[in-house]
Amino acid sequence: MKLQIQVDEKGKIVDARFKTFGCGSAIASSSLATEWVKGKTVEEALTIKNTDIAKELSLPPVKLHCSMLAEDAIKAALADYKLKQEPKKGEAEKK
Amino acid sequence: RALQPPDPTRDHFSLMDCKRSFNVDTAKLQHRYQQLQRLVHPDFFGQRSQTEKDFSEKHSTLVNDAYKTLLAPLSRGLYLLKLHGVEIPEGTDYKMDNQFLMEIMDINEKLAEAQSEAAINEFESVVRAKQEELTDDLSRAFEQDDFEKAKEILTKMRYFSNIEEKIKLKMIPL
Image (cartoon, rainbow over all chains, first blue to last red):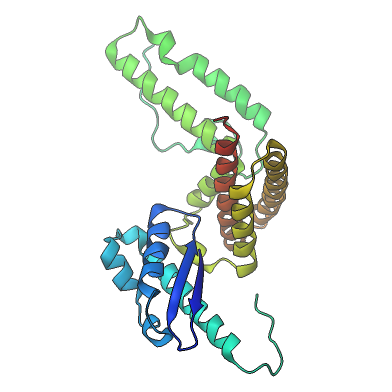
């Protein structure tokens, strides 16, 4: 699951894209996450929970981890954004 | 003598006359498969009672399942783990290491873009090499009864098995 976000100078997510290889639930979860982060501020996007995603998609119990991955992807994207906002002291290599 | 129903307590290794181990002689396995089907296949029970016909079908299906399961390293490994009481539930690949996941993501992305037959063939070679490497690792893990390691390797093999399927689909001419 890959999630890309574009954030403007005011801290609002103006665009988001996803690319997911996997089951339908994983694709749907990341697709929904992409839709939900658009238009939200970075702080607002942090409040998106996997349980909300799972509920919206009516994910079966066996696929709940897909929504968890989507939440993780959002958080990782936002963390990466914040990291890039920091003044360049010594650039840490991100994996 | 009438055909009896299959023994449900017998595992695939026992049925296919193989030692319960990851290392299987596939030539011997195939030989045993053919030998068994000659005994139980429904085609040979055309003249028998309905009961025997039903048993024959059950036997034949069981033999097919056992053969198919033991033939491929992935299914064989998963089955062997199961016999040891270890299962891999959905969602545990969540703990896969990042480097591996990025590698898979990379292959998936490039494969999706690949157009030429040459490019797709190259993927096939790369994937096959990875699978062979993992199979060797898996063999060693089972030798050491390291089931945690086996779980990890089998999870990786699943990813490559999925990619293998995608490659096969891509190779079907439109």
